[in-house]
Length: 339
Ligand code: X2X
Image 1 (cartoon, rainbow, N blue to C red):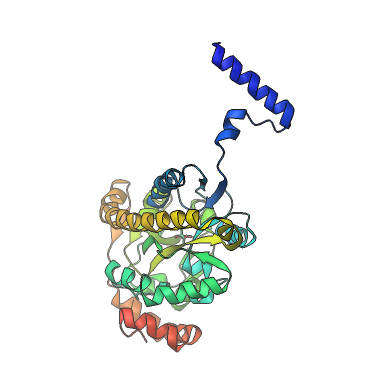
Image 2: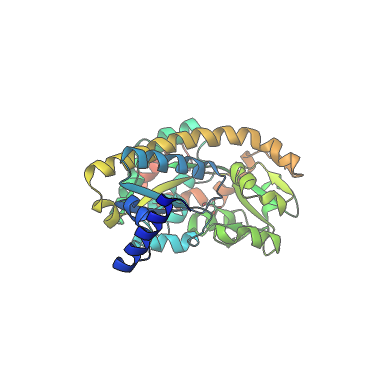
């Protein structure tokens, strides 16, 4: 042992005795003024977590070490339902959540997930960075959560199954499908006469593996990164809805930050969101080949009959009534007439 290391150990032992905290002196000297947790439900290798890691490093740099963002991917701190209550109580400081699941607290937040509303990404970002997104963020703020300006991407959702490909709406009849915990999702798959089961993402792999459900629906990037191809055979490109993650903060924790730190954190989160959107769009174009290589069988159903089925079941009329004329008009301003 060299001299400096021995000195250091002695110093830290002394600090432990004196402070009774057990933390080595060196580590304590480096501790950030603010150490905040960011929880999410996605795999470590998903673009959201890759960009979040990069963003955490940039924030640490820009705040000269004052702010440390600790990332907990993959439901390490609990399911979405658990985390939604944690972000409200302050158990976690940051959390990314699908607007559709957030709708269990903020009903307006699911409007962006209406079936077959968005034709493409250009229309999504124009609406979510425009009036529709502003309306939703206003409602989230009223529920006493802080939300960053730029929504992160989850993607356009596709349907997978262990039993059969989905080609027409009739194939969904009685289909045992996992949906996230959200009234809109359940309503939509009931309109298809499927048998939806609300299950948090933390339980999806095992629910598919044990065949509690036949299928599920998620964007290609997630089917790849969460390895759902290991427990599903068919992937039907139903493209039935777009989904994104609002970057939420606990209000008390957010307001505790000095204005300069707050600005750095928000700017970096929003900048990372834009990069993550681009990553996912790129991934979606290569993911089909990757899934085929893993042995999945892909098919591309015509979406018209699915839309017609939703219309005939009164799905659009029902949800227009729930969101109200004003919010529905904001959606239709972006995507055209739905109902
Ligand atoms: O739960 C899901 O399926 C997921 C990961 O896509 C969401 O967070 C909505």
